[in-house]
Structures are given as C-alpha cells and as structure tokens.
Length: 141
Image (cartoon, rainbow, N blue to C red; front, side, top):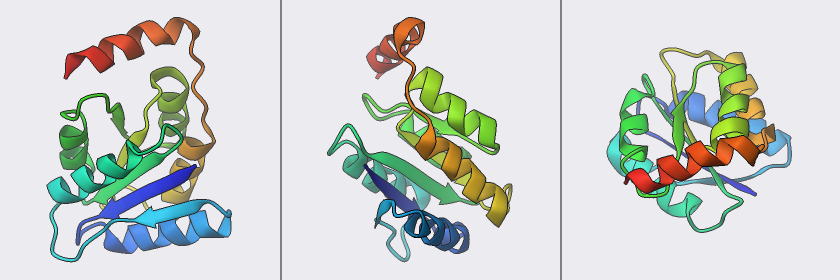
C-alpha cells in the first residue's frame, strides 16, 4: 500500500505532520502536492495515483475538506469521504470501501489528524452486504 497525499497552501502544514506520522509508521507515502496548485488540481493528482493500484489510498488536505471531497466524487470509480473524526475514517473504509479521504486543516488539529489517518489506513473493507452500495456508488459517475 502507498498513501498518496496532497495539499493546497491551506493544508500544507497539516499535510507535513501527517506525512511525518505515516513515515514514522513505516507507511509508504507519495506526496503529489505542488506549490501554487489549488485543491482541484491536487485532488485530481491524488486520485490519478490512487487509481494506479487497488492497494493505494489517498488523502487530500485543504482548509475545510469539502472542496476536494466534491472533486473526488466526480471521478468515475472513486469513493471518497470527507472526514473529521476517527470513527468515520475507519468506518468509511469498512462499509464504503472509500479509497480517498479529505480533511480540513481548519477543522482538525495535528493529533486528531494522526488518529483519523490511522483509522483510515487500518480500516479494511468488510464486503458482504456493503457491496450492494459500493456497486451503486461505482455506477454513478
């Protein structure tokens, strides 16, 4: 698994903290952030890399998380969640098979962000009855 991460100027500081945390956990990270890019370009770059392997996960950080979430949900086959708590991060992997999450640096602090990322990367898709909804989501775009 590789965690693809990106942030705009508003999310850079928190992104750097998340990258340091992931690195300390021996998780492979690819940072696709580019200075001067807005959340639309960053989200598209993260999604492109996430789609390179079914094991990849993506994280986009901006000020509030809503913008990247809206972009990600427009991409065919991408299931994304806007997350601001640990339980939602874990459950969106388990029930929705989300491969991408967005966070807002103006909403979550450093420690909460680490716990959210931990829940997201440690979550595993449950399948079963949840697959019906995942199939419905995948047919939408």
